Image 1 (cartoon, rainbow, N blue to C red):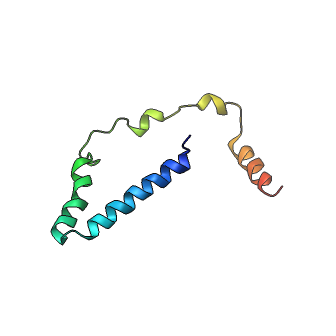
Image 2: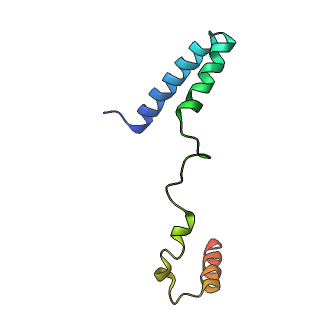
Image 3: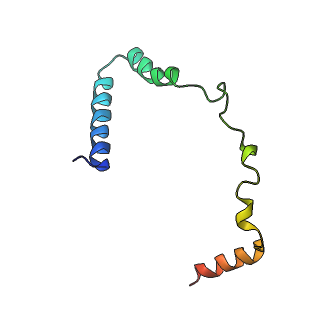
Length: 82
């Protein structure tokens, strides 16, 4: 049974093989290989965001009800020294 480590190592082997093949290409072909993933992936600057960060404003606020923020921070910092 393959582990996540095995999968990662197999992926690295594929990358190494790709890089070795790319090294034997002409500079023009190497430039095209570099450009290919860029042209295939969506441009974050032009694609519509899935969510606006402001949608998360107040999310989970009920968890902090009745808790003094400064007291919480002081207790957390004190726990670092323990």
